[in-house]
Length: 518
Image (cartoon, rainbow, N blue to C red; front, side, top):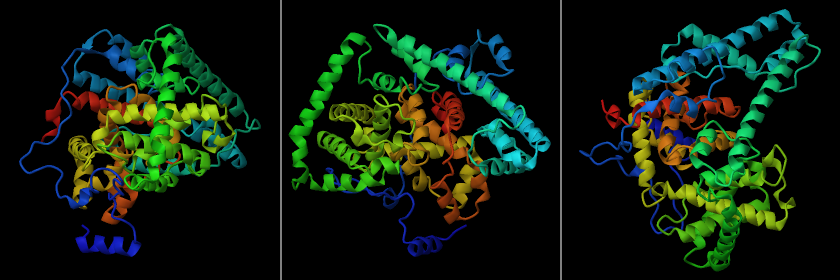
C-alpha cells in the first residue's frame, strides 16, 4: 500500500497535477472548486445518493430484446429466446437471459478465433498476417459475470491472442490466399446488406409527415447510420419538431436567433466582466480532440463563439472546463450532412461555404444546449452533479464487483481521481471520437441518457478492465492506467458490448436503489 509521502513525492518529481484535479470554472459567478480539497463527498450521517426510483411496470422480453437487438450477432440462441418472448419476465429472468445472450456471443467469437488459428497453421508463413486480418480481429470482450469466472489459463490464452492480433498491420486481405478472399467478400456483403436494411428502416421512418420519436429511439439505440445521423440527432435532442412541415421554418428561426445572440454578446468578450471566460475558452479549445480538426483556425473561431455565447446565456454555471469537449461530436456529425468524406477529422472545414458553416455552428450550439440542460448541475457551483454521480459509481461498483472495488480501496485510489473526468467529459477523453459518436446514438435514445444511463456505462467501463486493474499492485501505476486506458483501437463492436453490459446493470439496479446498500 502506497504511503501519502510516496504519492506526494511521485507527483512532485513528475511535475504533473494530482490525478482527479482539474482546471475549474473561469469567468463564472463562483470561485474554483477542487473536489480533492473538500473532504468527503457526502456529509456524515446523510444517506448515500441513489438513482431516481421509477414506477414499477411489467416489462416484456420483446421490449428488452428490441432495445438491444443489434448488440450481438445473430446466433443459435435465437430460437430459445423467441420461445420465451411472449412471457412477462421479472428482473431476475431478464438479467439471466441477457447474460446468456452475451455468453453465446462469446462462444461464437471463440469459435471464429479457433477457425482463424486453424487456417493460420495450414497457410504459408508469409501469408499468416494477411489471413489473420482477413478473418478479422475477433477478440473477446468479456462481460462482468464472465470476467469473474474466467480461469487463469483462459486469461493467458486471451491475452496471447490479443497481442498477436494487435501486432498485425492493418492491410487489405490478399486474393492470393486460397479461399480467404471469398470469405472476406461474403462477410462484407452480409454486413453491407444488414447496414442497407437498417438504413432503409430509418429512411422509411423519417419519410412520414410526422416522425414517431418513440420508434426512432428504439431504432437508434443500436446505432444510427451515418447518412441519417444528422437529422436523427436533431430530432432526438428535441431541436427539431417531429412534424416535417415545421422543420425548415424551425431551422431558419433558430439559426437566426443564434446569430442574433452573437451580434448582441460576442463583442463583449474583451470586457472586464467576460475576459476571463473568453481567455479560458481560448486556452481550452486547442486541448480538444481530434488534433487535426482543432488546429484549424476556422474551427477555433466557431467553437469560441459557441462556448462564449452559451456561457453568457447561462450565468448560473458560466463556462467550465469540459464543456468545450461536448461541442465536438455535434460539430463533426453535422459536417457529415454536407460532405462525403469518411475521415471528417481530416477535412478542411474552411473549404465549405460560409452559409453552410453558419448552419453547422448554429445547429451545434442548440443541440449542445439541449444536452447541457439535462446535466447542468454538473457545472454549477461545486459541481454537485458530478460529485453525486462519482459517489453513486463507487456504490454501484462495490455491489457488482467487490474485488475490484476492494483492490482500489486497498491501494488508496479514490474514484474521484479518475471518474471525475469520466463524468465531466462524458468519457470523451477515454475513447476515440468515433466511439463517442456511437455512444451518443444510444445516449440520445435513452431516457436521461447523458445523466442516468451514463452512470451504468461508466460502471461497465471500469469493470471491463478488472483483469488489468487487479494485476496492478501500486497506487501510481493504478492511477496511470486508469487515466490512460488502452482504447485507441476500439470500434463499434466494443461499444455495443459495453452498452449491452450497461443496460443489464441498469435493468438490475435502476428500479432497486436498495441494491446499492450492503
